[in-house]
Image (cartoon, rainbow, N blue to C red; front, side, top):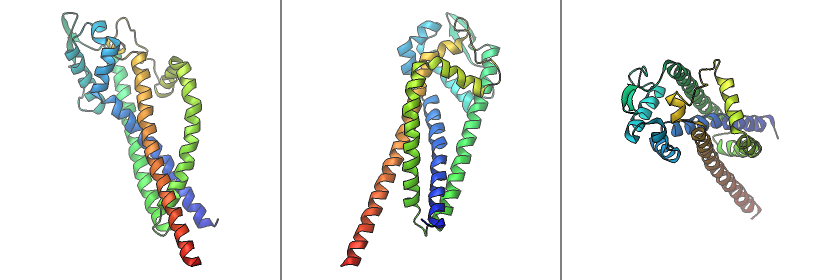
Length: 242
């Protein structure tokens, strides 16, 4: 294998790496902003009854909360609801301060995705010209190897996380937050009543399902591209022999 071919595969490998944060962040956003998902979880967990809020009010509050995360609301101060017969602000100051951190984390994740997408496009253009306008073979081969490696990691990691979800969920917060505002009281704080640990358990594995589906779709396309390329190569060899 010559230097140019090795370089093409190396670029294909880098492109493959940039695909994963794009898929992961997209999966997180699909779950976070899916009001149907919230409604299903609220029904499963009897959230409306636990909080003392009607289902309609709960969905409205959820929509306003996710609008805040997306930057469509400047503040959470105006989020009010009828809770146990009393109209009041839904979230206290600690919860609102935590959501400032959450929104910042989502912005960071969105920036990572955008940078990854830009890097992917730039690398693909480079690969396009280095490979004599035939980049798909190199990308597809590199992606299948990279995705297979990631699959092995996930196969090992998912059962470990499922065995002690609380511990690893806490480690996630220690890693991404530099304060303890995320530690909320389920007896008094509406936010943790809305999205308790069982909610996040379902959300995390739905994100992984979206992520895995995206990885699989690209992997299938890569496999078909490589198979077509090998078939063309065999046909060319057969024609030369004739």
